[in-house]
Length: 615
Image 1 (cartoon, rainbow, N blue to C red):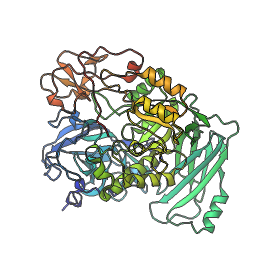
Image 2 (image 1 turned 120 degrees about the vertical axis):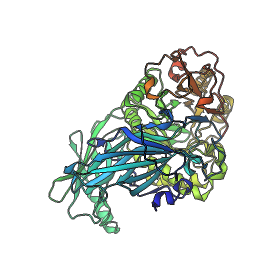
Image 3 (image 1 turned 30 degrees about the horizontal axis):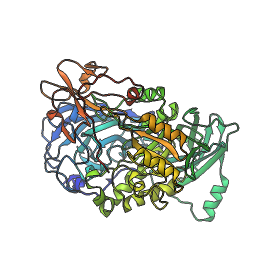
Image 4 (image 1 turned 90 degrees about the vertical axis):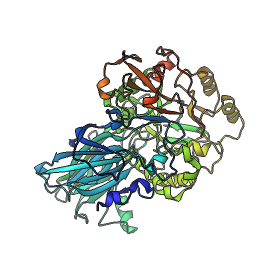
């Protein structure tokens, strides 16, 4: 019996992964073998249904709900699209089986071979040549699996990725958005030396002080003697921190299993990073064998900046900043969750053009490329964990069965994104009440990364000034403006007040912006907020059969107007929407909030207001 489905991991919240490698901040995209494209595909009615002999085709990355299957997108806010209580899933549980052959390069002999699945919604089961390899949950973070013992360099192997749509994890991914199923980000295969960089952590301060911490592992187990690291920052060599080595030796913290090394540098006349002048430096870290040859290399662009809270002010590089922010989903009207580099760059360039300087990644970690672009173009990012249990919020917040899932999702986000200067705040999630599971996740973050504050609206709503809550920022959602001003003038304010959502921009809305910003700019203690949201979630739909057009729809809409024979299935205009049940095309198309802020609304007749459910 296959142990993966026998475990029924889709109804076991305690199981967050099996066989999955730890998350890290080493970017392996360069030099990897891409596995994107057409895969053999079957859509099963349930995860324990047998695989048939007949295969269709599905494009990866992509959701099957947008690729002409009978399982179509559904839009809900607050309520789950099925009636099962957590952690259960419905008996009818669409399950996609993706399969393809891979040719493992012959020159990878003796190397560590890793499969990376960029994101899968919502439970991923991995097999290679029929052998179980691993399990992963969390629909918006990558999962990596070591295939060194299951594939042979120079040979062909069959990779099968099984994706279960509904699971215990769905109950904490109950965001206000379309429900999909599939592999939403790129799949790739890469190889490293057995001796490799397991993680790199960068601390770069506005005074030019740089610290780089490296973690080193060896696939064979014990580390070889004599390894060392070196680094350079745009040609300036980094210095080995011998005091760090000495302290570890004295404290008996030297391990044969895990190598730790630290380097530092002081950059004279450092050019600091902020949203107005996003100055970046190129950092290269090399791992050497005892003979000096290079076993592994990591490169990334970094920025020097500080983030701190002093009194009731959020400071970037010692200066109080206004947060002119917007909430942003990974969304496209033809591909659903899957967005391209060009899509993301266009989003950020448009936001920059209209004066925005901040993004909240509502409500999950966005595509990794988004953060690279935010570093480059200059945006402050509130990085939000993939946790929203809106329908069963208070039950799950203190449910010990979900404790590991909360900590897993928050910690893996931090481990992935910690080296981005654009990320200035960590968010514990959205609309999930507040409980011990949040406090556990917050405790992990404070230990691992004391350089950034934490926010969480579910905690902040219990008391904007309460220092005992997990949120370092008072981040209410649609708080009345007069309440915000009164709090700032009360003499009791202890934290920055930055609304995580305000000025609702889906549909016919966006009122009182001038009033909000007149108050924010004139009232100490108020620092801005994040408009909800950047896109109206319209999916282009064929009128003839009600199916989404999918990737074939390029050119079938222009400036928000659908071509004849098509209409917009509007996400956000109703409490619960199934794509095939949307009424005739009176609902709105995809509209950027940047256009609304500039007074350049697309002509979208007949659209009613959308009200977001209270937390």
